[in-house]
Length: 363
Image (cartoon, rainbow, N blue to C red):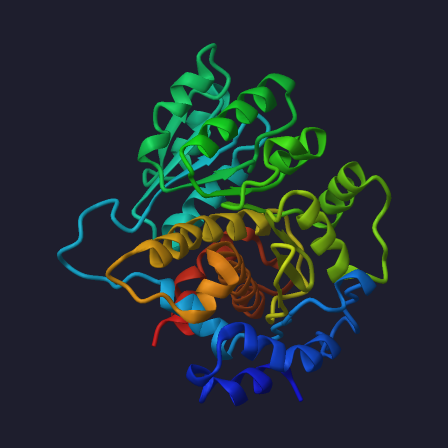
């Protein structure tokens, strides 16, 4: 039985079951299920008793969890109420990545999108779109102070797209991360910021409002540096859980054909449609969408005027945001590929965010 059927089977009477009980009820079947394209997703013996549900489709209670955090569109709202996000990245060589991340955050539904980049990158990024608020400060002498002065206004940070590996820039970003942790700002950490954590994992250890989004190469390097040995190819899910636990239950979204998302306690596996095209920049769309959904998810759980979705309370805002963003990105990829085939580019995917969002999340 496919896992969406398992979830649907219990959704009709889920009010009678606590979420942990519901999950425990379907755990056995969930752990035996696998994405049809990849065979078994190994857990490893040490996690065999965990209440792990791998969701393999864009339906059922987990999708309803994502829908529950999306804010209502109302005429009486003010600018910034649905999200003020900052993308921290962009250097002379890499200007496309921060643009795609910041614009994808906007297209997903945040109100204001800032980019904090180097001086050499600013003009190019500004020229791509007047929608973005660009700060050319990341390589200035007062980079940390100038960037951190804006942090109290930001709802989420997307750190890493187009950052590069210049030591001075990485040092500045590490200081910004420390300041953001003090302010309890949710973070999505991507690309070269994941490289930074491979060198200094203590920066993020235990900060459970962060989501790391490594691809397979970035994950393997981070795993080796933190765990001390290479990944076990037979324990694809177990590897991600193990790394998350070692980092203090920070949420990790390991990108791939099947996106594995875990906080070391619960697991969601996103096996949406996607496409066979692997042009650069798709991860930037993911991180941008994840930034917006991260703010919405944390806001939904904390809002005293809203009754949080039961699955949101169990899975936490980070898993909810990561899963929703993975679904959205895969759907964008599928829609763009259907139209452009082998010529599909990230800009084609970004044009599909509106349609993908409406087909997945709007009633």
